[in-house]
Image 1 (cartoon, helix red, strand yellow):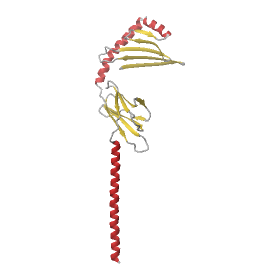
Image 2 (tube, rainbow, N blue to C red):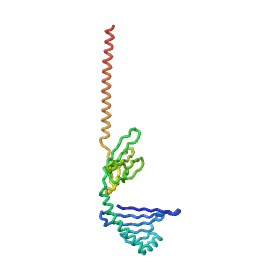
Image 3 (cartoon, rainbow, N blue to C red):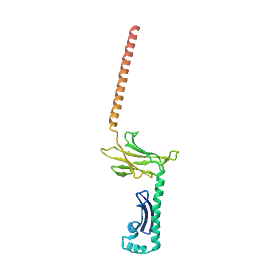
Length: 241
């Protein structure tokens, strides 16, 4: 996990980027590492890594800059201060995470109203806190944004939230579709695989057969009623004569 700070600037056709992040894996912050990076035209020029304890240059100009910064006592003290701040904030992050609520996720398919349209999958996350959450669709392990629509985070009225994401799809043999959920309550992204019901095809056949049988019963009953009615009318005409 890491906190990330980005700063971009441009001068004419030149482009620079400053990246600072605090990286850690343990709650006590003993392995926390603070990294400062400066890119110029997408090329990494210099980097400060608290685990190394100095600035390293990666280009000809970057090496010159690194030498000057490493000799600057004020700059190095400031880097040490930021490294210590990084470690202190780890505990704050985990304390905030303990107050979070893990979402309940439901992945399901919905039949399209129009048979000519693709089917739809719905990935819903319920009762989570804090509000910030990310749902991502994966097809065979790769992120897809095509035919995807999502709602905003919707309040439940009890400090918890819900969100829904929709994926229109045309089923293909052996394709794996998943919904990935990222939230502060989760140590790592959770992936939920969609598993088509093996009985869905048989259910449709059973419903169709039941409908056909019901129609046949009504047809036979109608035919019997018609014959009885026709026989009664002929008998009534004969008596009149």
